[in-house]
Structure formats: structure tokens, C-alpha cells
Image (cartoon, rainbow, N blue to C red; front, side):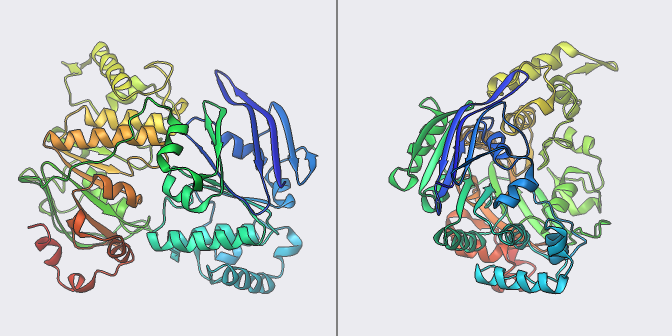
Length: 512
């Protein structure tokens, strides 16, 4: 047995995060850790990696009871972790980033380290150039840097937190080949994911958490994805996600030769984007992170302004309008960053409700009607099943999934004509994802135009009526979802637009 946790308990004020957890991971095993947001997965992983200490319980590593004394101690034992948010310095090279995590004696000889990086990355099928600067790498390649950094340390247990959320389908297959090779060589893998089809393909053991306790164990290859989902969310949550496709009606949004050169040296320049989005449809835009999604969302939301005529909403040129002016015309926005852009961490949910709803009937003659604001916040919390103490809870006190439900609800309940969502279900559990998708479909059926920017390919295929991709600041053709195969979408995400890419009007004609 590689790792055995028993009786693990961790309590925070008002929250029992882990309650009598037992987890067994064998050598060469790919073990899934499943559960809803707030189930206790992250806390448990941080305990294993030494980031936090448990209040009670025992950790046995390779047959010996240990006290984990921080991440450096975990790495010395052979435990590595790749977090959902990478910890890389963009202005440093691959080798320099990896050297930072190694003992001083191993990082002094950069030439020898570069040789080891080439050898190990090639052996595991994810070749890296040690001299490349990180900001020039795709997100998939950056993830390889994180994994190779772990492999250089004689890894025995690799913890991966949502590792496929930022990868193209082709990169997912490459990652799975690497993980299967690692497991075959005896490395144990702890795999955290909300994508249950990936769990059933890759993992041969699973532990399910709910409300901080273990609620089930199984071999994912012996059960269905629905069985796994039921173990995670219980019997009360509907799992049916078969949505009818829609054709849409009149054009709600037009991008007309939209170009943009960001001031950020690591930003992406947008080149002559042309796009039409119809009322009553969901248009999905796929793409690997860092290919212009942030710049496009900033231009649509009004955080960046451009030529007035390059963005048209409901017949009005809005490219030079402020965010508030756009909201008054019926625009709503769900940004990728929940805390900081979607919500202010230290503000209450009531105050966060008011931030993007000031144009509603919530004030009169310069005075805020806090009774109406409170009622609006309570309605969102109840309708979208937001788990929180009350409407005065600080935004930062909510789990990621619950805060996302609140932000989505706040925007949808304003009944927008156009809603732009960036990664609407990123990192949320299956129950929250289903609720959010149902809400988007209902808004579409009420006649709103919706743009969903996401790296979750499965989600885009489920809810998008038409689909395209963005790569290096350029848009692919946009076609009805049922006409775009996964291989084609993967090629578009890699910038291979085929004959359409040579014809500026091809994107436009695809909307007819």
C-alpha cells in the first residue's frame, strides 16, 4: 500500500471540512477522488501534500506513520501535486521554473538539468524545450512543465487537480497516455475531476466524498458515469442533460472586423473578427486558454473599448460604450474570475447583487432601496440553490460552485437580451453544472442571445446550438454543433481552419 489515511478530520469555524476520512491508494493505482464543490476534496489533498495539518487522524506512507511537515517534505517523500492554477513564472524559461522547486545542489548545473528535462519529458511522451520561455508555451505545454517538475523528484504519488479543464481533446489523449505510462511504472495517481467519462476511462479506483465524509468507493470501470454521479449528488438531483438544439431568430450581436491590440505584453491581438449571434441561440466558442478569449470578453463587456461600429448590439453601435451603458441596453456578463471580477470577496451577497444591477429598479432619486436589493439577493439564493449562511455572507465565504451559481443567477435574473458567459461551469460539481446549464437553456428559450466561452468541450457540445473556436486571436468557422465533429473542433482549437481560414467571409457565411 502506497498511502493510507485513517480518521482524518479537519474543522474550520462553522465548517467540518473532513470528517473521519479513510483513503487507501495502492502502488500503480490511478485513484479518482470525487465529490461536489465543498465536499472536502481540496482540504484532503492539501493535507496529503502538507499544505495544512489535520486536527486528527493518521497518515501512513509506504507502511510508515508520518507527520507531514509542509510541501517540501511531501516532495522529499515522492509526493507531487499539479494544482488547477499553475505556479509558473511566465518570464522565466522551462528549466528556470523547474530549478526553483529543486534542492540547491540539483539546480546549480543548469546544463545537466536541461538534459534531464529533455530525457524525462521525451520518455513520457511530452517533450519540452528547457530553453523556451513559459509565456511562449500553450497551456497544455505549461501543464507538462508542472508534471515534469514532479517527475524530476523521483515521484511515487502524483496528485492532479482538474488536469484536463484547459486542454484540447488531442492534449487530453496525450496526457492520458503519459499517466498510463506512469501508472504502469508503479507511480500512484490521485485524479480529481468533475468529468466522469474521463474518470471511467482512466481510473481503476475511486473514493467519493459528500459533506466531508466518504459516501462510496468503487472501481469506475465497473460502473456507469450515472452511477458515479448518483454517489456524488444523491438521488434528488436530475441528471438528464439532453437539450434540444435551436436555430435562433434575428441577429442580436454583430462583430464587424473587430481588431484589438492589447497593451499587456502577454496579451493576444485580435484580428478582424466577424461574427453574428442570433436571439434565441447559444453560440459556443472553444479554445485553449490564452488565445484571445480574455481580450474578446473584455471588448464585449466594455472593459476595453474600440471602434463604435465594430460591435453592434440590437442595432446599436456599442464598441465605444461603457459597461453600464451596455447593461442598460440589455447586456449581461459572467466573467471567468469569480472573485475580483464576478464578485468582490469582502462584500456581502447583497452588496454584490447591487454591483451589476444598479440600472434595475433598485434605487430612486439617488437613494438605494436596500429592501429591494435584499429581496433580489434572497430570490437568487433560493432559486439557484446557493448554499450560504444568508444574504449577508461574504462572497469569499462561499465555495466556488455556490458563488458561481449566485453570479450566474444575478445576471440571468436581470433578463438580458445578450448574455456572455466565460467558463460558466468551470470547476463546479455536477449538480451545480446541471443547474447552471438548465438556467442558460431556459434563458435561450425565452429569446436571449447567449455566448459561452469555454474550454469544456463536452459542455459546449451539450448546450451550444452553433459552435466555433478561437486560436491566436482568430475565429474559426462557426457551424451548427451537430455538423462539427470532435476532431474538427480540435483542429480549429489548434488554428487549423482549413480552407475557411483563408477566406475572411467564411465565418460570416457559416452563419447563414
